[in-house]
Amino acid sequence: MPQPPRPENDSVNGPTGRFSLAVPLPIPYSALGEAGAQGLKGKSIRTRGAAITPLGIEMFPSGDKLAVGVTFRADVRGRMRGKTGTVWFIATPTIDNNGHAVRLSNLTMTNKTNSRLWSAVAAPVNSELPKTIGATYGYDFSWLVRDAKTKLDQAIANPKNTANVKINISNDDLHLGRTAMLPQNFIVEGLFNADVTATVLGATH
Picture (tube, rainbow, N blue to C red):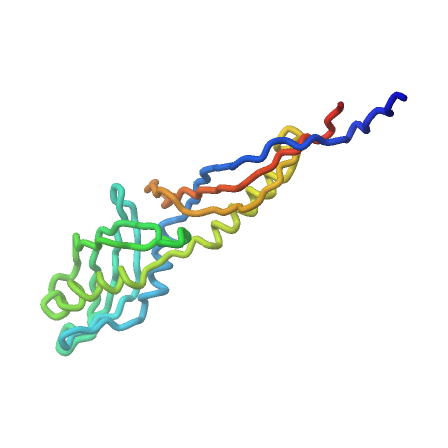
């Protein structure tokens, strides 16, 4: 006895595999500086009877590294008390172990302003300030990773974007990879990985 035809909207399950995609995640340098200011601004750094208080942080690209400028107030006795200066470091941006935040390492001083201050604040600026930046600085990319992951999930889940193939995602994750310095933004490569199963919609038999 002949079988009735299958509906036009029938589907066929396809193969299962691993899907990988690199997504650029741009962050303005001003946002990186603001993240540093949150951890340092207004917090006294003391050593050997001298102290400084960071007032603000700037960041700019410098080759494959970041230039980090810290403006501070001198909290010392004498005529230099309350005076301000700025010191610049070159730092290497690194991705932390969980893959969702940027840290700074290998800070090297490159320039300083208001040279009259240095005899009074040399100890906290030369030793304690770079240590403090290296230990406390972090820009948390979790929000950007979540946003990128949500947009990817939505795009992949829409059959209009996948030639009428429904893609089911499981075990998906997005971590940070390589970094790059562009004129306006610090770019981090977001690495999206997932297990996928393809189902062809509207297949006929």
